[in-house]
Image 1 (cartoon, rainbow, N blue to C red):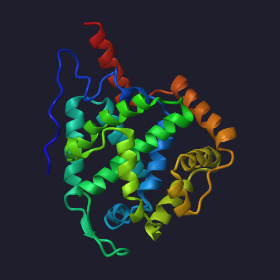
Image 2: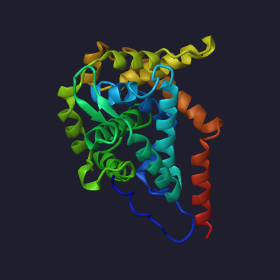
Image 3: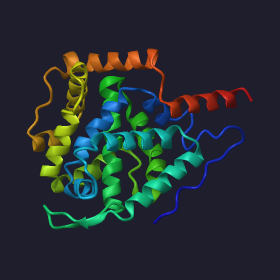
Length: 276
C-alpha cells in the first residue's frame, strides 16, 4: 500500500493538512454539508463492487448509521484534525480495507476495498456531493473556488493510499472520472436496501419529519443519472421548501449548537497560532 502523505509542519500549532485559509475548512464548517454526505452514500451504492464490499463484510442494514458516522468522522478529522490525527486515521482506514475482498454476486467480478479505482469512486462522489450541497444550500461557488477545493481534497485521498497524480485535481476532471464509471452503475438489492435505510431509518416519531427533509435534500442534489437508475424524481419542493428548510436548519445549528469537537479544537489551535 502507498505510504501516507508527508507531514506538512510549520512553526506554531499544527493546523493539519489544510488550515484555516483553505477551501476545505470554509466548506466543511457549514452544517449543510451533512446533506452532501447522505447524498454521496446513495450515489456510491450504485457501484455494484463498492456496495458489495460493504454488504458482504458488514451488516450494512443495521449499520448504515455507523457507516455514515465513520465517513463523517473521517472527513472532519482529516480536514480539521492535526497532521498526526489525519495520518493516523488514514492508516487505520487502510488497515481496515486490507482484508475486504471477494467476488460480487451480481456481476461476478472481483472486488477489493483497497482497489484504487473503487477508492477514487468513493472519493470522487464525496467531493462532488459536498460541492453540490454547498452550492444548493449555502451559496454559489465560482469555477476557481470549486477547483481549489477539489485540488485540496487530493491530500485527503492520499491518506487512504491513492497517489496524488492519479486523483482528479479539478472539478471537470473529477466529473469526467465519475462519468467514465456511469456504465458500471446499477441498482442492486444491497443498493436499494441501503438507500431505503438512509431515507427511512428507525427514528422516534417526532424526528421523522426532520429527517424526511434531510432525505429530500439529499435526493435533490443527486446527479440525473443516479435519479434515473433509482427511479426517483428530483423533489418538486426542493427549491421552494427543502432549500430554505435545510439552510435555516444549518443556520440554527451553526448559531446555537456547538460545532463538532474536532472543529472546535481546530479553531482553538488556529486562534492560538494567530496570537503568537
